Image (tube, rainbow, N blue to C red; front, side, top):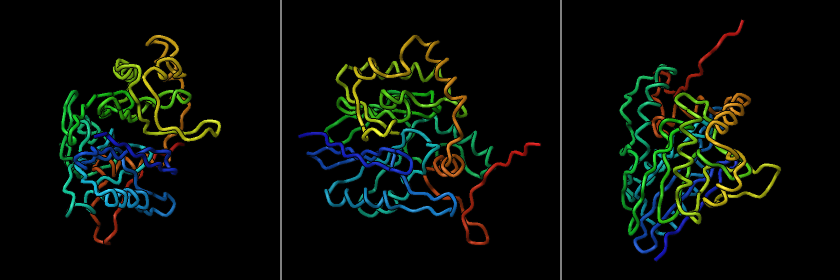
Length: 287
């Protein structure tokens, strides 16, 4: 029986989400599920997540894991929402890289959040080379810091779900200017991915469709090695290119709401005495 991979594209954030299932056991996992957020109104909704839930039910799959490749800064995760919606019939676990504790510590201070920084509410914090089962298949965790310190990739039977490491070859690689990010570490992480066999499929977390080209969600190790626009030289050349590029990039539009929710796997902050959830925006006054 085969491993099945079904992708969902979230247009608002150019995010690709993957439902991976073992055909013989009907067990599945979900990687980087996005919610829908309207910044001007502050409205958080779950149209995309509900499409995923309906697909799981229609295909009669059993969700085992909700996985995050890292705490995203460009969209809000729907992981906790999906877990709550399916908890009666699909008691699944939330998993991410063990570096999430470092990310929680930094941003809980920045946003003055009263929260534990021990990885909660994630059920599993994966170390490098950790393994777990999805039906007949073994899932290998690869720590890939650089974009963020908590970044991980998931390898399943010749498929690597790369998170924010590689983009499609015509878009290069992920930025490294977030707290704890490092262009040098990202280069080393990319080399770990490129060490897989040439025909290994690399599944993208984002595709920004430069010059209006059609959406693409996967490539191969060979194609990345030969065609990626950021891998034309050695490590120092990559660092210079990556840091130079990062210096020109704007802050992600959804940075503040995304990070505050994503370090908690999408759980909302407690309501105040006005029965309203609130998020914080740090104010920097330039005189």
